[in-house]
Image (cartoon, rainbow over all chains, first blue to last red; front, side, top):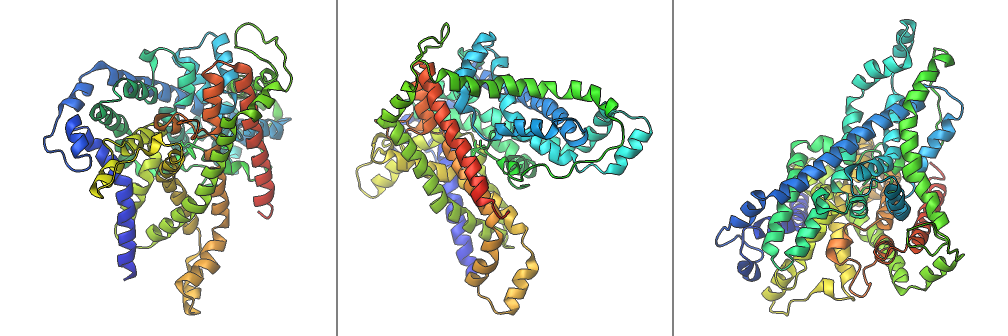
Length: 270
Length: 325
């Protein structure tokens, strides 16, 4: 009896989650006229033209490529800069270490939105407005605090014996980092990498303010432009939305465990 | 979900998103130092090589802009040339006088209230359901977490369609009931509630995952002991589950507040803050009245207000909620 009630509840909630997603995907297969008379059910006639038109065009692929480029470089830079800084915080004793770490942790306290106008001016004065780097560097900077914290926590678990052995053998800090710490840190590299990548892949505010030309737009910006152009043609917008969320959904189901770990990182550990 | 947890999300929480992870910041000062062999002399190169990249990026693109926001907020400035037109506290007085700002503040509080009173219990309830050993529990977890993986912009567009009075789900339901289809997003009285539905739809899965992790940390033998003592389901929940989940609940509350304070991406595809400013949040207000009009001084002042709210919340929450931790 309890089981029946549990399943009923779970299925209803799953329906609430899935119906909008399925309606969006199916809507992309309908004509505008059918969307009006039959928004929920299966299409009477499957129209492939909406999807095909987008997939055979340049625009969709350019958006995805932009997003991929920005997110990949942001993740790479974040992993590099954060893991190096975290290594010193975890393993090297130096004057002012706690102070400096707390300085970075300040970054956890406010969203990027608070400083977005001065950031715009800063990026403009560097001549990086409307360039990929003008988005990548700020996104990296705002991801550092969290990433350093996660890395430092992980690095601190390195057994002391390992250090002693390495130092006795004349291994310095930098070699230790490259040949022992990094190879041992694959789980945390994956977690921080996914966390940073997804955040950058989905980011809207920073590129909105820092990019100008549509040819450089990542997909969240591109899709808003597309929606503005075809706002009366819901079938096209729905097909476009479906195609842009599809990569995320596929990756999510292919690597659920890592994605969940990555996106709830820190929270769960804390 | 994101960094800057005191960031979502998010996008995790984005809760935003992004927003996941702030938690770690709350564990207080770094306790144990790792004692190391090797002399300080060896540490020179590693410090010179390893610290500056992060330090420079963070200082120039995070800390400096915040400081500049404080400086610019006392000027009337369009962003070109140098800020010369010093106007003191004028920008802050202006902000306080905007009805849209008051709406934004109210909406942020409303989002927090709904997160705490609706989303949190809902997520906790579902977490207890999918934590039992039933078939398909894992599949349900993944389905519930799915919306959190989507970008706010995509979720917003999907729901813009759902709410469309000509084509969407709401229209379909209304027609099935023989009613006139409403346009919830075009009605100032309803638009914010419509957005709240989307927020819960997108973010409850994240909170559910937090609670699942929390539930896994509870010692099974406690429940067995309770069974032997003849405790009922409700009693077990109240005397074991709930008290032991308090740390997780604190986290969940924290992410809800931070997520609300940075909510922007989702509002843009749905309403852009309209109709008649009825769905503004602090960040959309900053965008519509500061950035869109290139009023750098005014926008910076809004940023300073947002910053102050975030910092005050972070410190007081740390004090209040983590007092006994």
